[in-house]
Length: 210
Image (cartoon, rainbow, N blue to C red; front, side):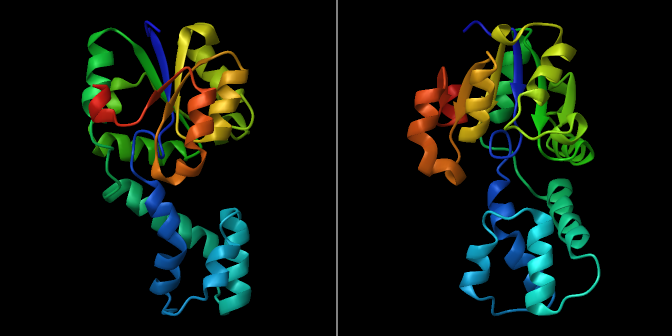
């Protein structure tokens, strides 16, 4: 595809943040002095939302206060301070920018954290806008965030490349008529074969894609 427009996911696609999310529960509980965390607790929270995990921690460990807000604050600090770009991303974005490609970021992460993170990493300038799933009121099992991005870019889905690392998001964007670029991330390694099959093209390594 001769790209003129692009929508990028952020977590696991542009930035190497999934390991921070994976370790968040352990990091949070350790900060509360809980040094021995039962393996079954960590297994239970894998499919849970943040609020469900927070409720479980309050029940199991007798924690008080707004646990969900405290965990969100901890993760927010990582976005502001130390989550890195994936190697090769900056150069890839620079190349698209030089070619005149108009780009945006559509993520489940809150917009103020996207803004802080991408500004710190010195790539914010490449994107026309950032949009969160929170803004449209639906996650990426719905195409709403992609359609709103296309509306803001002023073009049709078939003219836009969507870069995603999660299988369900790849499937949603593909079904909505977008050109899909599957991006490898270790967090979705078990789904990589399916992502390859669903995508129009794939990126295993940003440095090799530059």
